[in-house]
Image (cartoon, rainbow, N blue to C red; front, side):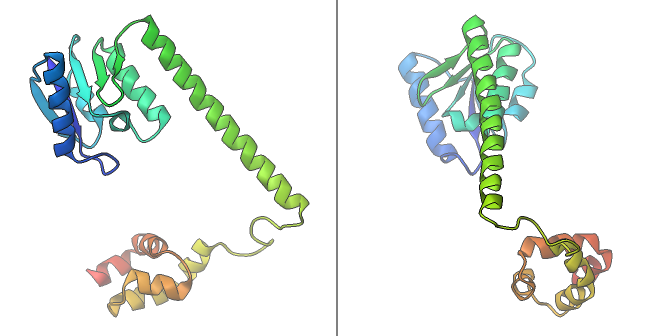
Length: 195
């Protein structure tokens, strides 16, 4: 069975453009697509096909995940079930064989190297800032923004009850609207007042 996956995620091209790209590819290769399936994650779709021997077409590598690690996990999931995966843009073909296993090992190694590099770079930058005399973190005994927001919970609760927006309250308190949202979730009375 040939399955064409349409990624509904915002990071990808439109599903219509993906469908056209996949259809053109199939036609040029003399393939007949049996079904088009759209989802937010290719992993959700892969779980529905437990049998082997399918060919999955995707428009591009971005359809496989948000990070190199997720992309490798997606490819691995299809290969372990003895299915083939084709990324049309770039003509990348992943089939259950030793070459693909080696490629996946290489990707996993690259993910590990990237994580190590991020850690080393962060450590070096922090060391440089310390050596330049910059103080890092909060002063000893200072409260975090979250603890300050918890103390201002009553103010936030009243402001929301008055109909003020989270963005407006956040500007006044010099925090993000998301922080106000989190406080609202933590204080049950705020949610009940604003609903």
